[in-house]
Every structure is written in structure tokens, then in C-alpha cells.
Image 1 (cartoon, helix red, strand yellow):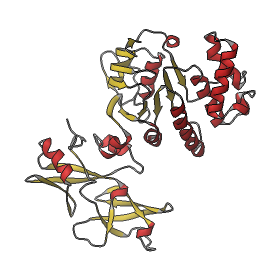
Image 2 (spheres, one colour):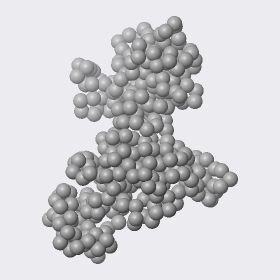
Image 3 (tube, one colour):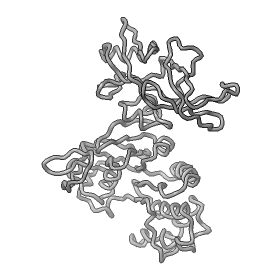
Image 4 (spheres, rainbow, N blue to C red):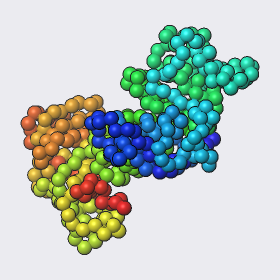
Length: 382
């Protein structure tokens, strides 16, 4: 229902002298820096990053709850910087539900429609339809205190969608729920997205939510966009070590190594292992004019293979062995760094691992990521 464009958006707060990692200018603390994003009609965009990275501030600027210091916000091509929140045709779902405790569920959902003076018959129809979509019809006459956390969040979402907004903003809507309810509500949001035709902008610190919900993910750190891409792109082609370490559970392992160039081919050397990189990776490195250098090699836990020999492998010491059903997560120390190796139990034939046991591992050349001293992925560096 709406295209949303954020061009060179910045948010500056007065410097209150607090400790933070944000850039400080003569004007104050730069909470969001040069944020650029073009959101397509009906696209589901997720802003993700650690606490204090600027994702909620960005969402609040889109909502009109925070002033924009610099830059332009446009919805369907119309400049919105100075437009009142109520006139932006957006709706927002908050982390703490923000329901009126003295009103019933129906009254909570009717409230935004009453403000717009929607006729009673139409208002009832819209509320009934939203309640059916969200599975809360039987709770319409109850008050919020009689509902569980998941039910209250459904009511909060229902109150937002009855308005049929152009843009639906969601600020950490599942963070107050337990793990089981979060999983259920993620599925509900995916189904909701298929049933209502609106543009979603969703904020979370949970990368699992980001990966399962978003058409595209915007990864932020210290007020700056680190990468924008599909879940597959940010997982398979991380722009830098921050993205590589943030996306993926458990996180990527990082090892000190060397990048060796030999003609048109490349290899990485990690401890006693020398692994030739795949043809595709070599082509991308060559296209960027990358030469041999000291690097950090990143490998995801699920891409590491145990080796039965010490030849051309990396040595590690087992610290903890976690049984995770069909997999074992080995917490190991290799080259002085802690990391995790994921092993399928089917491949072990009943083998157990003891504390302090020495093991060896390797990895293939198509799963290694190579980062320079600045932490940028040499395959995708601009």
C-alpha cells in the first residue's frame, strides 16, 4: 500500500555525557547516521542489531514520534518530515502492548476508528474481521488483564490493522513473550502478512526473528547501516565481521590466518591447514584486485568437519560437549580462541568427547569467509 523512502536520515541528541559507542559531533550524539533505505510497496523490512544501535530511533522517526534532524522521509513520494503522526496513515505496535486497561478488547480495537469517526456498523465489521484473522474473537468482551501476553499482543496488532494503514510499524513486539509464544507469534505474523496488504517495518534485536520474517534485513551497529540484504544474502555473503558474527546461531568462528594468491587461485592458511578457496570466491577476490595478506578467516560452526589426521588440519581442545538431539555442539579452543563446531550425531557412531580432548578439524574452500584488517569481507569490499 505504500513505498517508504528514507534519504540521508540522521538523528542527533544533545550530548548528555553518557558512555556510548556513538559518534559525537559539535551538535551532539549522532544516534542515526546517514540512513538510506528504499522500501517497496508491501515489503517486509526488519531492522536488527544490538541494543543502542539506532533501530528503534529510526522506527520512531518514521512514526513521527521523533523529529528528524537531517534527511528526508517520504511515503508514496510525499515528504513526511513535518507531518503529524496521526496524518501519516501509519500504525504502530509497541513492545509493551500499550492497551487501555479499562477498555474491553473490542473497545481497544475500536478506539482508533472512533477517533476517525468511522460509522458504527463499519467499525464493528472491521473489528470482527481483524479479530477473526488474529484468532481473538472469543476475547472481544474481556479486558486486557484477563488475557495472556500472547493474546494481548494479538489485540495490539488487531488495533493497528483495523485502520488498514499504509505502513505498519512494529517495535520489538515479541520481546516480552516466552520462547514458545515467540515462536507461535512469529508464525502468526507471517500469516498476517499474507492476509493484509500493507508495508511492514519491524524492529528486533533477535536475529532469528529477522531471518524468518524479513524480505530484507537491515543490520545496524552504532547508528550506522552495516548491510542490507535478503536473509540468504546476509547469511551467505556478510559484508563484514560484525554482520558475520551477528547473523547465524551459533555465531561464526574467526581464526587468524593468511590469504595466499597463486596466479588466479587463492588459498587460506590457518595454523597447519592450507585450504584452496573455491573458483567463485577466487573470481570475486580477483575482481576486487585482492593480493595476499594477513586476514581473519571466518567459518560457520555447521561448516566445520572433524578430521581423523593431524595433516593439513587445525588442532583444537574440547572445553564443553553439548548434546542437542540430532547434533552435538563442541565448544573448543583453537589457536587461543574459543569457538563452536557442530557435529551430526549420525556421523559419530557413538563417539563421546571428553573435557580437554585434543581434536583436529578442517573446512572446505567454498565456506570460508576472508576479512581484512578492517573487518571487511574481501570478496564484497567496495
